[in-house]
Length: 172
Image 1 (tube, rainbow, N blue to C red):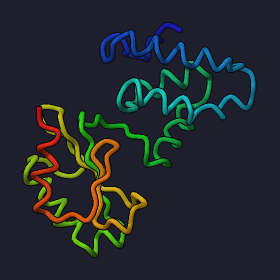
Image 2 (cartoon, rainbow, N blue to C red):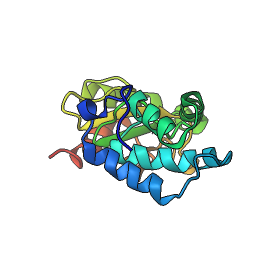
Image 3 (cartoon, rainbow, N blue to C red):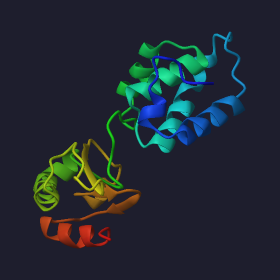
């Protein structure tokens, strides 16, 4: 599928990204007239976020046109599930748990230390694109509180003094 005139994919992202997404969607053999076609949306959005790194509006519109579902339905799914993001993330994604157990055991101090050392606030990305910080409700490792993840690696039973060592594992 070629980009529509509403889509600025040629300007924003590499055509290769859209080609990969097209190949994935085409492989699902979705009938554009099947009322159940929206049942594939979460799967498609996961793949798109994997390819693009996030789900900006232009990618949402592209998917909407590709499988003939309303853009509002796509944006509704993205806003409902916290896995999806409409903002770019850093190469190294720090997710700090602020669930009850983690908060009580000092997660706020750990967040403050990450923000201080990276010179960004939660929800932001460092200027070099290496790190982003997000606050999450629960990682599911309350016994390790306070806990955080960097990419897919879990760190638990932390203090703010651990932040420098954790970051040193990810610097070039």
